[in-house]
Length: 285
Image 1: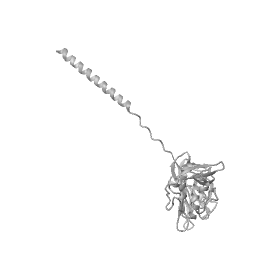
Image 2: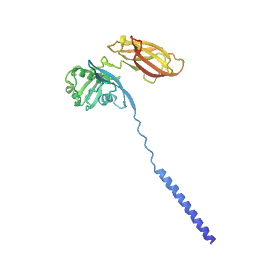
Image 3: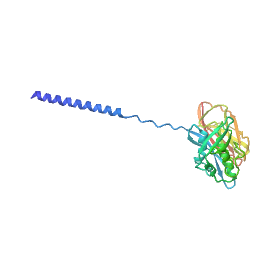
Image 4: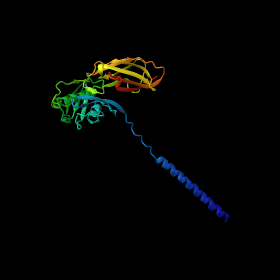
């Protein structure tokens, strides 16, 4: 009887051990069967500059905007597509190229002339002569933001002759067109150097474009606490109502590493206040 009990206990123990081993094996199999979750591809974004027409009661002009877009292998084409599909952020600015238009390609020759090949839908724009001129400049100025592009011409469905009448007023007899910022009214000031979050040092270059009273562009560098570390002014190549470029070397000798901002503006003759101020975050070592 005792032997029977011992045998029964042994059988139960063996059963438990086998059951436990089975669970372990199953659990291991389940772990092995789980495939790793694939990581999502990283989408790289970049800034591009585009120019949109804007019309008020008395005139039509261009506004300059910086848009963030996905990086591509053909950024000039991406920029023109942003002109077509992107949404202007400036109040009153509008797209001029019909939204159904496709950019069939852009070729840049060795002398810096870009030829944009549009689909025939581009010819459906309904604008007057002034709108046509500004619309052409919006494309030209957008593309000449790229350093290798100096001039721009257009074709439709691969044919230059199809494009010559363009939108029925000005036409393209004078193409290729060169960059022209005289019709860019907004913003009054923009800074091209230094870029946001750049590291600056003594003698750093401050440059950009301004449409300001008497061509006088003021600037100051502040630290993170708002203390002015250096200030001065420079002159644009032309004063308002014209637009001119400015460039100067800034005397800047901070006591040590830090962060802050560059402020660029023009000064009101009426009350001495800053007008159209642009703020660029920077740091220094």
